[in-house]
Figure: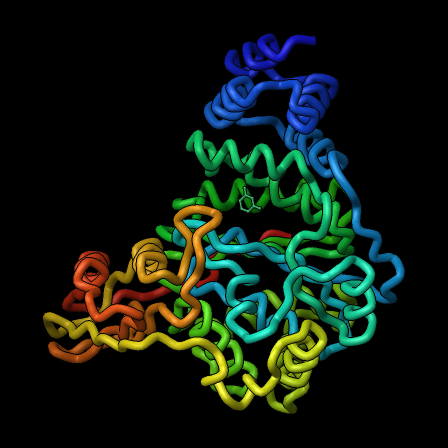
Length: 432
Ligand code: URA
């Protein structure tokens, strides 16, 4: 078999055989296929897409390119959640604790932020001492004992994805449905979870900017999951504006703890409860999503979700005094307000621009090896639809330099104030 013939086939919109896809994945992992040929095939896939069968084959071959986590020693139905990535998206943190408080084991494998999107692992590392890299057996033991653990991918999970993702990043082929679906699902299947709830983001701050692209991605993810016998569902939620009121690592841990204490922002709480309800139903602790939602609300009211979060911090070496004292986390030196330039209603607050602003302050990475400044970020005082008065602060910039003129200008450019309130939709669709 020759790689050039496989590229030629996909370039001419033909379906690849199982053997050709296997040849490609094997060659990527062994290093026998040079990066320029891999990149050429990725671009051909980007333009000409893949059939359902090709997507599943690519996913399974990528999944089989490395180790599989064996979670069979953990009793019960293990349920995980994945988000396709966004700004202010700290959902996994309170969600894992709330679902665990109901008794469902949550072995969560999360990622780091890159570009304008944040990463769950970076947020957790704002807690002094918190370790996200723990061995496989410790991870399993912790989930058995505490019902939850959130860690980075261990060992050699889906090495084909690592190589392919790095090339996608520099060849502008990230936002391709078959490539995103195979990347996410190869890692999730190899991670050994029984059930998965996927939050597919749509809008300016998401990979998929339109609802129809997001629907296609959601269907692709669910089809692949079901094809391997995983219980799987997806929800499409808005990422035109940031989620919740805080963007930045320390700031998002603060908002997580506020939510677990019953003081979370409404949009974040609603999404956590909706995603969580499906996790509880898939974990077979409730018959209906309505029943599950009430159970999750009770975990906040009785403090059991906060207790699970604290147990996880302790188990992973973190300073649990953070629960009552947020000052143990790094905080920025300066707080600079952004006053509204006119009266009206907030009509736009672009998630991608707010994410880039936070990254420029030092809260995110432009390159994979950039060091993070945990304390910086953006605290929103107004969200889309809110009434605004001229001179009133729209948001606070948390910075470690008083010179934030560039960030201020960026933020003003991404904000629109209109004469009338615009309705805001948070959850668009559920795909079961
Ligand atoms: N997350 C992943 O793991 N892979 C992608 O391609 C996109 C988001």
